[in-house]
Image 1 (cartoon, rainbow, N blue to C red):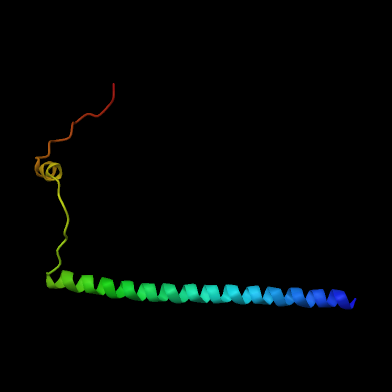
Image 2 (cartoon, rainbow, N blue to C red):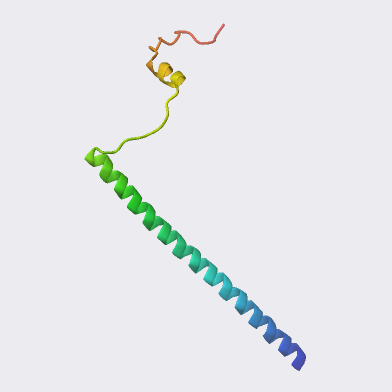
Length: 84
């Protein structure tokens, strides 16, 4: 009987250690997400200020095909689509 009680106590001790590890993991993840969201909120604030002040420019490449397609005049859509 004493051996069974000892095994039970050891199992409870192991479960408690695993529970503590999960608790620390979740707490660490929450802290990481909090810091990550704080950094993003500062970045969004900076972008908003630049957009309001007018010194915000989007940079990128435009291919010649993309620019000519955007400049091409639009034609009227056909009146009847499909049907018999």
